[in-house]
Image (cartoon, rainbow, N blue to C red; front, side, top):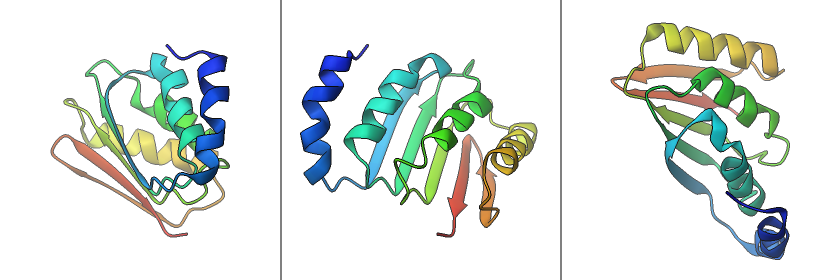
Length: 121
């Protein structure tokens, strides 16, 4: 778990870092602090890949990330890797995107255990 102190100590780094790709592993919806840490640390993220545990509430995680998009405006590719990914999860994520954003210029697709969302900025 990350403290406010950890985040404050890393804020100067976020001003100069140019990291555009972040991959997170073994994530659940309870890991919002860690995700927020990387969003704060890497404001230039264009590609975010999140490997989820099988019991992760992926739509809830998607909603959290969508609510952070103001801080990562360059995000154009989001990938969830989930061992139980299916067409129902794709539909659920599409409904989450539609309810959380005014930018409806996106594509969402599933290939095996990967669900990818691509926004045209």
